[in-house]
Image 1 (tube, rainbow, N blue to C red):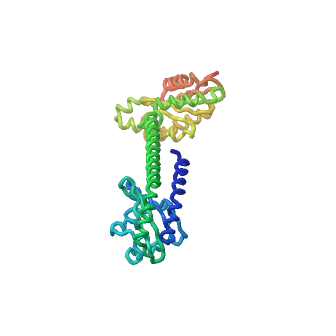
Image 2 (tube, helix red, strand yellow):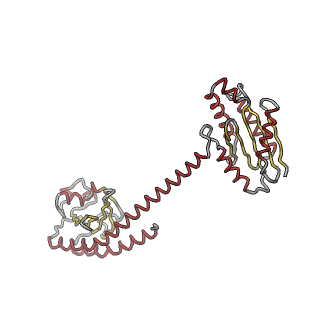
Image 3 (spheres, rainbow, N blue to C red):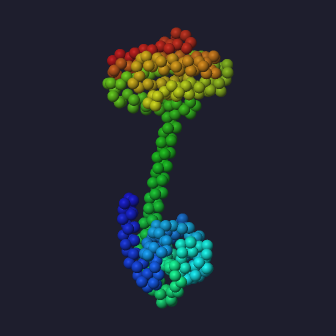
Length: 337
């Protein structure tokens, strides 16, 4: 049920209760009459409908814990009315609202109390047993309407709970997807995540967009692991991952494809800009604690305006050429349309 339909149904139920509350005021002579709904699960009491002149500050839609309810206080004392509220219950919510006289008649449905018919006044007024009988009849008349109210409230609560569960499920799904696409060591995209981003990147304005791809890996990474241990190797990978993130724009994406193989994609980037980025990455790594132990080789591939299908392969070839040229080299190649 949509919120609009729920609100419409509740409004209809309120309209059905209003004449009955006006009748309560006429029977008792009290200036305020109202119906409450009791939520047994949340142990709270809500004011459903109010009729009155405003002297008693009972507000439609207001809620109170059942523990603090005036109705509960009377029921526990086995009373249905009290005309000395301020003296008998000085710390109660009723006294705080200025009540001196208050009555509560339970509304039952299928032998369960689901709410109350109440009245209140700032004056000292005693109600008779005949009036009590009339109020009990009104409570019976209220019963069906309040039961429908209870059904709607429970339905709305279940709907809200289901929506919350769905929202959490979507969040879990997105979190799992993000985890599945991320390298846990560096926080960069993994091969799967890279493939997804690459496809989306090349599908947008393929004929117009220039793209630069930077392929990187370590020089003699195995030797680093052998000489200093795998912990040092992991720290070196993390250091390079952090440097790549430092030198990327919001719409660039970097990935660790596996081992010491990294890839950085720069949409809308021209040849000289890509070379400048590669130089900054290499300088940052050389300045890191691992820069004196080994270097990184970098291959760059840049498109003109044209297809990108062979760009990744060209970046790998440029990287291979850089590694064959010696430690810490950068090679840049352009893919022609």
